[in-house]
Image (cartoon, rainbow, N blue to C red):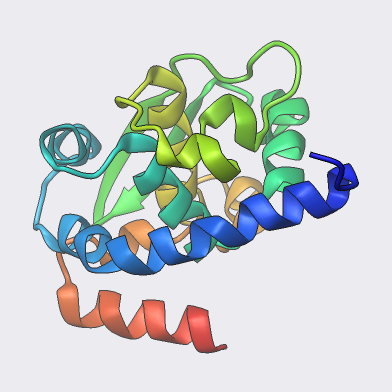
Length: 177
């Protein structure tokens, strides 16, 4: 209660690490399912025991996409996605995702997404905002727009959906590299 705010924030962030480790296999299992669309992934997340905010936190950690990047994405949204959609290549096919709520008014941060500290321990259903961020983190690195792909190059996890062996290797490289 009397800790400086920075120390309180660090303590809250550290307390989520065990939760991420505990649920990593479940997260990998969700991404290992072979699916043909982003909507299919949303259905799997909805029907799994993993909360949407916890699933999103795993993705953001894996893509090294922190709070500063979320804020930058929101403030620069119209220059990154001028048509309000993400056109991307996945499994040799072109796909399109139309953003539902991005950009949001005010700041886009971990608290708004329910992924900061203790908020992560409260199960949240998949919201339209969660879906938008999941789409960005999974497929922006595979954007057909070269500028978008370059800016969000680390957002390439979607390339490993349905490929458990490659997914495991990718995750190990990210966490150890």
